[in-house]
Length: 111
Image 1: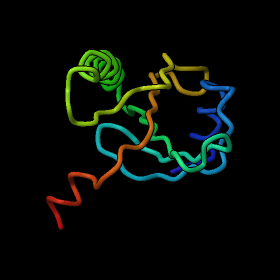
Image 2: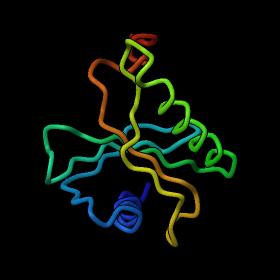
Image 3: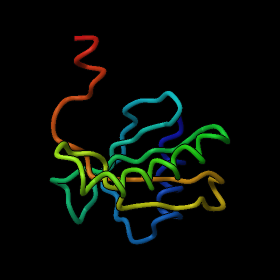
Image 4: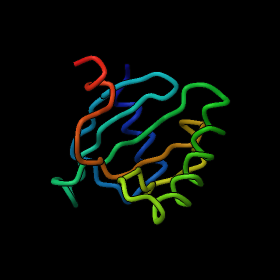
């Protein structure tokens, strides 16, 4: 896992994002990173990178669904603040949102 490459991709896709740290936190259909910024170190971001072609379509659909559901659901869901269609370093979409409070579902299932 080349974390420096993903940091460069974020810098190219979102030039105003001042990254303090980036950490790989999981994968499956997407490579997922937690990003701490200089502007809001107390509010980490979660960025998702699809690593297969259809994953880009899935991520774009998720952006739209989350935008529609966010004001209608009582439970917190991701609210994508960062959406890029790709860049020269990474041809797929990239999306980022503020980390939600709580524990990942997979922790509860395997706990």
